[in-house]
Image (cartoon, rainbow, N blue to C red; front, side):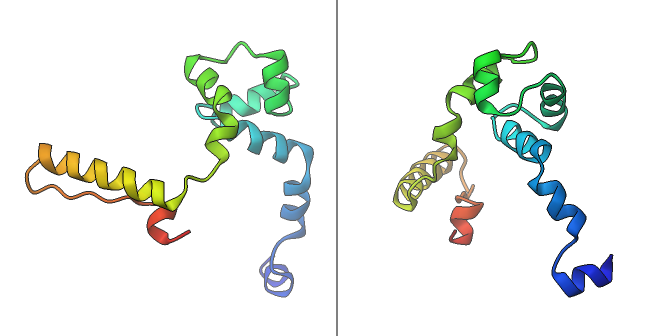
Length: 115
């Protein structure tokens, strides 16, 4: 396997798996806030192949949190403009520092990394 990775930059088995229907469906389902691997697996076994299926067919496992995640799915995929993140960071940091003397805060993740 190491030789294959060095020579080709990855494993063919992984490439095939990632291009498969199950991988794509599981990945999309897990993109819904509140749905983890086990729930996505159960939904897949029950014939749910993505967000569209979940909206149309529903599923007994859907709780209130998942309903919110499903309603906001497309919005949560959108990136927040950096200027907006900076405004939110400024507000949250100022508010936090006013409540907790000596505390510091900052935005993290892709914003901090510059992505």
